[in-house]
Image (cartoon, rainbow, N blue to C red):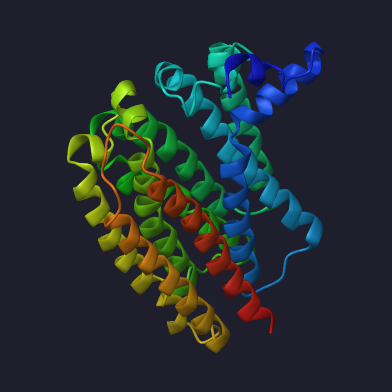
Amino acid sequence: MDTQSSLARYSDNFFLRKTKGYFELMKPRVMSLVIFTAIVGMFLAPGEIPVSQAIIVITAIAIGAGSSAAINMWFDEDIDKAMDRTKLRPIPLGIVSKNEALVLGIFTGIISLLLMQWFSNSLATSLLLFTILFYIFIYTFWLKRTTSMNIVIGGAAGAIPPIIGWTAVNTEITFLPISMFLIIFFWTPPHFWALSVYRYNDYKIAKVPMLPNVKSIKDTKKQIVIYSIILIISSYLPCFDNNVGSIYIVMASILNYFLFTNAVKLANSDEQRSKPNKEGLKFFALTIFYLFSLFSALLIDNLI
């Protein structure tokens, strides 16, 4: 999609155009996974929470995630302008200014923390605060531009929402929420490395030290297989909780079969750097389906 086509997505009305730009600054597609995993964590926690309160807590988590995303786009304007994947975001397009993005990020971050503290508890609020600060200061400001292990360490931020959802209901953190954290933590590297294989030239132009650019595409594919195996092992950790039964085990096993076979397929795919590796894009999409389905399996197993 070119710049003109992208601008056409926005209304001529100033208010509507800005509103859409602000919303996209908060990365709604990323936010949807954050919301879903937090809901699962909240649902699996022993205890009860009024529906109205649960909605506000989930909203606070979503706004918090959007806050860090907006500040990420503020800081990464130079990278977003250089990459085909991101050059049509609101700031590079001129829909929203850098200052507006920063103000939005700070404002929504404060709102999310106030909502969480008011309608939940200090532990859940502290975890949300840690997640926001970790993503901004550790990942965005430091890791992303300095090490090829950026998403391995930085993935911790995206793995905390299930624990936040859990602690909003029950402040006793047991093995189950920790296992959910580990699943997302080990899911993150193969997920984003697959994207970086597909978008190798993008990251090279933007000078972001993703693994394929620092090592090689071949080495990255090996790491995707290795981390996929670790992820598969991690996916069975919830089984050690007495409340997780055979339905989850069966569904997880089916998902793990497809994950592993496709990781191997990616590892054996064409390695030309001159064109996008479509197997990388396919595996990237598969990992999204995998995580959503795995957490759905936890939910279904608990309901039946």
